[in-house]
Image 1 (cartoon, rainbow, N blue to C red):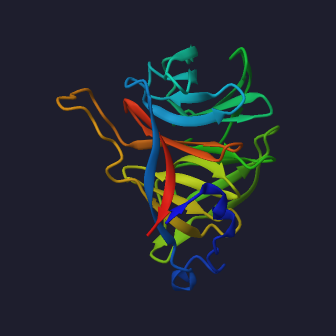
Image 2: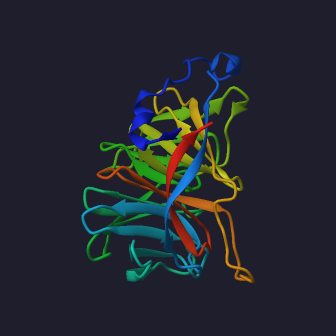
Image 3: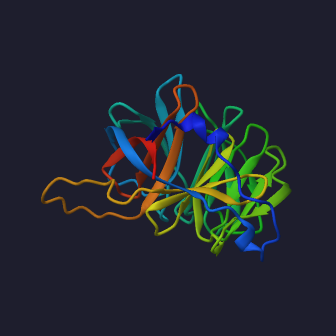
Length: 261
């Protein structure tokens, strides 16, 4: 059965419990996917963060690797880069999110977040933080950040101070290597680095309520030989309820629907 994104609000959440009581956590719902559309994506983009802007039908994308890290404005329909800014070569760009007409971009090990004007890409200011920077999203009032561990932090968007944190877990234990994040219909979605699956996380308990398996989604033309890397990049159209996913160096971006197993 094809499940639309909006129905996630109705799914049951795991039981709250101590971090060592994993057996008390409900089994997550297992999902696969249906591809609705496929779009071009810059195959030189080492995708670290992805955000969809409905009114302009554009994506904000953050890319990584030292010497190649950028923020971009990308036309969804064509994959054309409409605007781009590189960051200094000593920084490794990571997750991005759009909040209050500002674009936030984490860095990997520099403990620095850049904040840009979303229209001009001019730097407005910066924040520091005491961890690695991996993924970034927001829930409408707080920034939500991953650092590659099983911890997700909720931050004040004005001061970048930590307001709370959750430990992400499923019945098998802590879920580590949480990477790119997206906030979708009341849940946190997280790429798991070096895995073809996405965790759907209750933002109150930290329990994984669903697993989305995206194995096999990248279909390449015969003879394709350009470099490829892992699945990474989730964006959501909160008006038309569309989910987009891609990966590092992937030539395509996919619009998907979920199918419950």
